[in-house]
Amino acid sequence: MLKHTASFLQQLGDRILSHHMVINQLYTNGWLMDESVLDAFESRGIKPEFIISYDGTGGWHDWMRGRPGAEEATLRAMRLCARRGFYVSASMCVHRGNLSTLPQTVETLRAVGVEELSVANVDETDLWRAHSEGNAMTLPEYMEAMLPYVDWYYKAGRPIDILKLCNIAYLQRDQLARPWFTSFDGTEKCLDCYLCSAVRWTAYITPEGRLLPCMPMTASPDQSRFPKVQDIGLQKGLSDSYYMQFVNSRVKDLLAVNQECAACEHRYKCGGGCRASALCGPDHSLLGCDRHMCTFWKNGCEDRIMEALRRADETYGNVLEPAAK
Ligand code: SF4
Ligand code: SF4
Image (cartoon, rainbow, N blue to C red):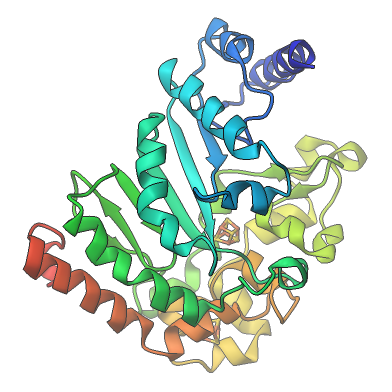
């Protein structure tokens, strides 16, 4: 199996490179990672970043993946990639059960050479609600649970290079912290901004060949509105397709069809939020409201986050830029 993996990656990688595309990131669960896979990349002169999920110590990773041994395989892959000089970042889906493992999780990741961790609440999909065994958290619960980790990060001496607390703050060892929430500048200038700048520079192709703006959209059956590459070809898909119409959409296009966002006092900061969240959330609409952001902006979360960062700045120093204090 491993031999086939390396050979498949070589074929796939060569095809991608032959079209002058770049491979700078690779998402993997690490199961099939071995030296030969890394050799295949290195022999082509490419050194992508590996992004590997790790959902916490104490058995939570295996529980989340539904597979005994998943944690061992993941940590082995991380250690191998880091030892070979590949940059590895970890992402952790946090929930009521694994929340308290965050300090230990950071320690475990550092021990295998990982210096970047991104933490996010598990998306509130129907599937997760059905199988969470009581561990699902709402966004307000997630915010309450994660805010103390701002203080923890600095109190613990910034124990990892980068700790991204999604929807809260981006904490860094050698640089100032950045609050997560500022999508737009709060003025009408946002109307001409793209709905999502991230989907302007990456595309996601599903295993069945569907061309999607990003991976989280796979959680919605409405992804079927996007074209399949094998039906229309990548060139047309990336120039003249429903996919491109979406990728080219501006905030003003959303406000033209979404009356709730158009009337919202936070629209010039929020811009309607994340499209994947709107599609996979209760609205089930690509141009609907991102209910996470509604919760965020309408409950003063911006102030709570800034308060936590300012407190950390006063206590530990060198956390916020002077203008934000
Ligand atoms: S998840 Fe949301 S913010 Fe991220 S790329 Fe997709 S639409 Fe954009
Ligand atoms: S807070 Fe909600 S209603 Fe307001 S702009 Fe954002 S998504 Fe739309």
